[in-house]
Image (cartoon, rainbow, N blue to C red; front, side, top):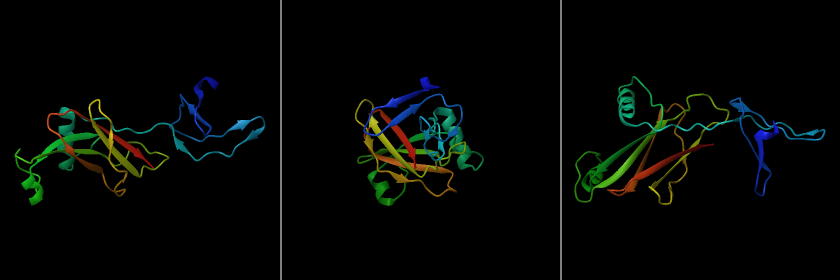
Length: 170
């Protein structure tokens, strides 16, 4: 129906189609009797791993590391490493002078349902609440047989409240 289609402004002709009932679709453009060739198959929605918090996150991490479960969303764990830990290459230790705060983000490698467009890259960005986003470089997702993707964000400061965002694409 025409009320579900809106033309978007810009230098290229683009339209926004709302309310599609199917998870996959193809597009064709018709003008009078002329019809374009069909587009490639595409997904009608984008998978966004929902945040895992509190007991849900803790339970899923324990189950996953024990080999009995899988992550169902995006988890963020904060950690602290001291300058001596970083030099020694171990992640343990307490808070000391020169300690660094970091966040470790974990999410499933694959969406819970099959997609027409294969996800091949990710980008993490973060910010202090209310500030501008800091984009980390675009990174290729690990091999297909990988279950969980992990990314570490360093350069965090104590006493600040941070927001994290994950972008998945092809």
